[in-house]
Amino acid sequence: MSNIDLLLDEENELTFSLTIEGTRPAEAQCRLIVESQGMSLVFDSEQYDGDEVTVVLPPLKHVLKEGEYNMDLEVIVEDKYFRPLSMIGNFEKSIEIKAKPMIKTKKRSIQPRATVSEVKVNRRQKPVIKEAPATRSISPDPAPQKARSPKQDKKTKVTDQQILQIIEALTKEKLDE
Image (cartoon, rainbow, N blue to C red):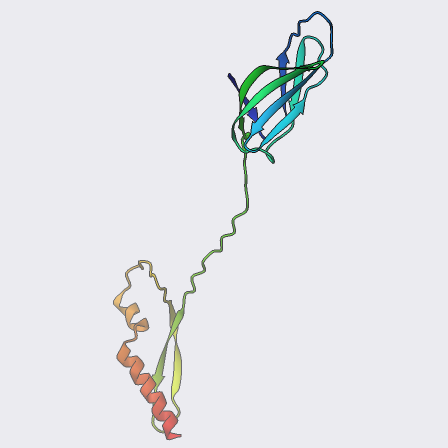
């Protein structure tokens, strides 16, 4: 048995050399049988011209899976049946390329901003809030920053105690009203 490589997703044309010898000339019918589990596919040949026989297999990707299948060339002359050739057909897919778009959303990092404010409280007057000129970004994953001079740190640095004093002063003022 010989092996032959065939493509599942393309048309395959197989040509066989065939000689029929006998005492009387007769018309021959040829066909190729592909055997699969549970079924056999039969493909009739083109007209036999006395020298070669050609069988065209259509694309079979919707019928067969990749793999090896037994194949037989059958010849029928008058009332006689012959199987002059048996082979194994190795059916494979040709190169297949698939592409599909992938949607990726960019993660936006929301960076909260903090403003430093100065509150002066006079018990007789309403509190006066002055906004400081400098603002600073606060990020969850801070990048290394340039070294600052001590003067710059004093302008933008607010301690926890100062924040608590501001809140306390504002709540006292509200209670007094």
